[in-house]
Image (cartoon, rainbow, N blue to C red):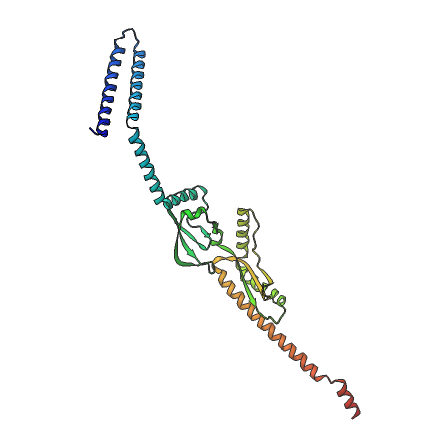
Length: 296
């Protein structure tokens, strides 16, 4: 008889012995006529539980080696499953993290590293993002599938306030500028105010709403123009306007066009003035010329 068959045989004997022992104890307790019904049920219940416990302990001791091998097999199987589905488990944990912290919701604009777009859908494995160009603030038509496990390690920027209004900044760099750059600033500032005049009131209210929500002061809503120099010595005009997101690029192109128009006009005026000065100098006689005329 093999070891496995012998263990089955002894298990059957243990079960039979436990069954007979319970029957015998129950009859013995019931014969005691002096015992109250409540005490009799209590004694019968205690006897059954004690016999069941002894039977389970004996059964575990009998099958201890097989149970140990089975547990090791189960542990190895679980480890293999965990290693094979590690990414999926991390994605599910990331989904629980996003659901509990709520850093964004469907419809928000978010940025993670170089990915920028609108959240279209979330599930236990990924976040679906409709990509938006950071330069034009328009949909590119591309869809980004971002695994949830990356959202636990990558920084997440909620850019939802940019859906309506944005603090749009851009610069114009000039090489070998021939006029005073600060002479152009007042006229450019007047142009920028003119482009932003139609939505000034709404921009002020929205700017105040964002500041109250974030608890910090942000730039705007009045436009700003700064003159700076680059690291290689070129002159840079930095524009910053608080405007509707849909009009940001249009206003940018208009201000760039105004900048070049004013710049070349100022350069042309400077050249005309320099020619006028040189012509006037040519008409003024020198001392030698005056003396020669007098002697004549």
